[in-house]
Length: 317
Image (cartoon, rainbow, N blue to C red; front, side, top):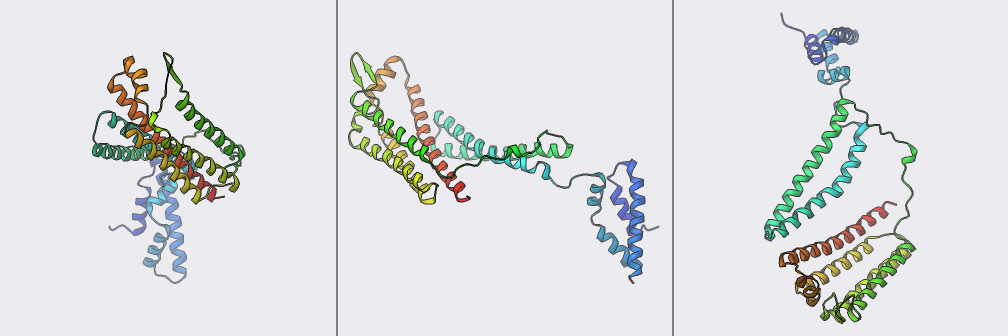
């Protein structure tokens, strides 16, 4: 005997339900479907069309069964979505960059060529990012499916404090102080020196930096102070300020790496007396040089990113 559409629909609905609830759900569906079919027949529809329309209106049997079993049909619901998204954004802002720097640094120290460094860094960073997405999401999916209570509840005490936009007088004062200290330290190293051995002054920076290379650095420091002054007057970051900040960071990066690459940044006498003559091996010197390059690049890149992040933040206010 052929089964009716109603019987097939009910069987498909209760198939995934616990055995102890199947009879109750079957009885409930038989009653509701019969009432819906009867109501449509009263409006003039024939029995077959009324049955088909009533079942179509109920929708997918799997979705209906999920409602009876109180099973979510989403990967992450509103209970955990915001916590997942906030944590994921935080991790994405930190982990991939740290992985890329660590891999690149390890490959450079191992003596890999440029192509291998770039390829391996990109590949490992992408893999780490994919794993970050997967495992973070998996944790919250498990929480969603098990109904675990993290104990986290929102209240008004979690509202963020109002933050002033842009930069203020304190930032300008700090920029002036650090800029002055930087110029003072450079002049002291050039004319008095921080290192004295057997009564002889040995500068840390290369003597040939004076005067033009150091004067160029003084101009960059003064420009940074000027940028801080303009930001203080404007009270917020804008795209032109971010572009200017990026240009200054790139100029400093070019200045430092060009001199370092040509052996004109650090005084070779200082390296001989303080490091090589005290047993520091050439391999250690190479590692120190690589770390110095990564520090200079990291500082410049951080400064650029920080300026654009502040610009984006202030544009929303």
